[in-house]
Length: 530
Image 1: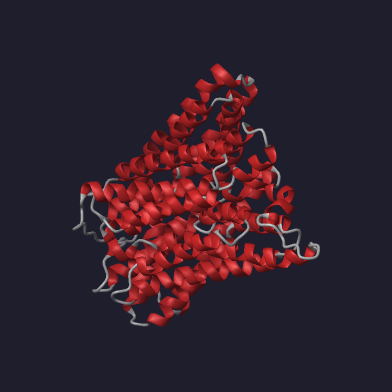
Image 2 (image 1 turned 90 degrees about the horizontal axis):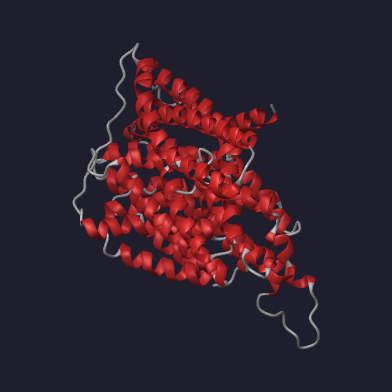
């Protein structure tokens, strides 16, 4: 019963702020109409129930699967096994990620099927699998994370120069959408498994950070490569607006259930098959344990079907309609303020952020307080959503005007921030891009882009997830610098002695590594459909 209450509260905390904001807008700024409001209320209820059931399933089914597979891989002690497992599991688990499903379906809708849902899912999953394999090799051979990330992002921005603007926003959105409640536990299990193969366990725990961040970069890489190879530079799209007749609201949801169920079943089947095969050959679990895990998988399936149905047949549609209507009122200041508030309350309600703040306070031994973390992250994400809307409102302002200086700053900070915070920051890049960002806020931005004559839904409607995912990279590394400056006086060097490079990381290595459970908790909550 405790897990039901806990996950129900997590789901409620994620959805309630958006629900309240929409009601306030409906009653005080712009009435949505009874039918549209009914669709939103029903969609919100279905999303809430589905999200709560899904989180229970992840806790009792998908999470244990990742843990058992990670341990089995580590016990093999063979690098080829770790790499092969990273490629295989990275591919299949990414396909089943709910946030990525939402993004892929939205891309398919906007492009009229030119880019199908399955095409984007497969392409992104290939990129995630490739970078996971590279990241596992990095862990085993202790290659510095900041150097690898520098190389990866230089390659990514080189690809940006040859990619069409339509694909750039989708690519960086995919980076935030691909790391969610399904993918992250598996990725962390693989990272910890690879770290266990190292002789120096202390450095192994530290090196295990960053694999989630590399997986996100893999999503960007794959979509940009697809853009270069397909040369679809003239890709155009249009967002269909919500059209409902009174009395058919419930029927709309009922008709959507079978299609969503088929898609979720296809996505989860490979993961379950791999686990059952591994449990028969390597893991040797008791039947009772396998039964409990399979019950958790059933919960995951049911919750994911309900969540995707609620999102696609009411929740996101109302978000798009609201964005379009507010822009149509010709009050840009109202749209900007609403966008900032949406980002602000979303990050405050995200359960993963609460875990993250506790972790950082523990890592810094109380030097950086939870209140400081909350303030910096909430302001950063609020600004990210606000800047995304300003980009849509202002002609000529593109996503690259934000991403290029933003990632330059993030990469530059890697060379000044304590190295521990580099891994935490890039692993936590998807913490802010939770279920409401990937659904309602994305739809809100697309609706605004659809209404403005100078905007293009394909170019301007996407990119808000990318902005939200980028915010923690800068915010958390800046917190790392705060910790670095505050902790330097704690040690008194001898006469003429300066603090050696890297002493910050060494001094807090035990606290920074944290327990494996706490380390997993931050990104594992990331997508909380993350």
